[in-house]
Image (cartoon, rainbow, N blue to C red; front, side):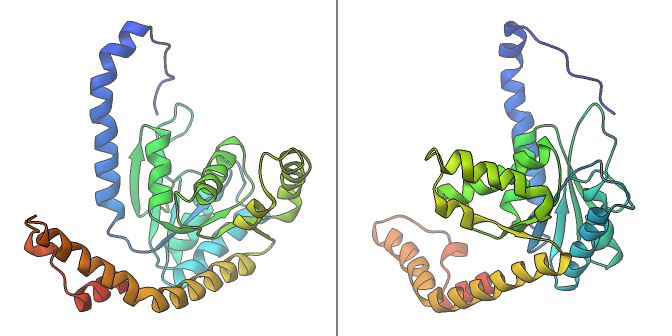
Length: 266
């Protein structure tokens, strides 16, 4: 367990900046090399304070179990509470149970159900791992950290900086106050649009959460199939165009259309 951070003066900050860059790069490299091998995953967020006998703990475990049975890996923050429940559900189902942890002064190591763990010092590198390698986000009741993760996923979907993967909030009673505030304050004052509410869904059971994700994946595969020819033609023409401009394209990037289709479907 790490000791609490101490306040640094400006000279210390400037002196350490260069080394900090290498630390950040190291976290990205470690995370990318570890997580890119695991295949499609779903991130599950929620409070570290939920007890094992709580309803939401068991819902989180059940969501992870069902997702694992459908071939998805499960990514959590690797801590206790909702995170532990999700890792337990995936681990016990024989699925891929991943923890993307954060070095905190008040929290210990990964929970016992994490099979593949990635530790982070920086919150922003950790959140990149969640967002980069997830095909959906399931958000259970939580605190400030959970809200941070939720709104980052919504923001990136809203701005088009991330694919609009399903964002599923579990627990109407818990989330309704927040949604009411967003409607009555943010939307009323014009700081968000009504269509932003289409970026997420609220459900009350594990089955509903998994169903929403499954429905999306079916629709995505349909769109993907319809657009495959356009996408692959564009890729093949791209490297051929570069060569036509006198740029030497390495052999490993000179894919045929058939090879590209096979790769993106795998």
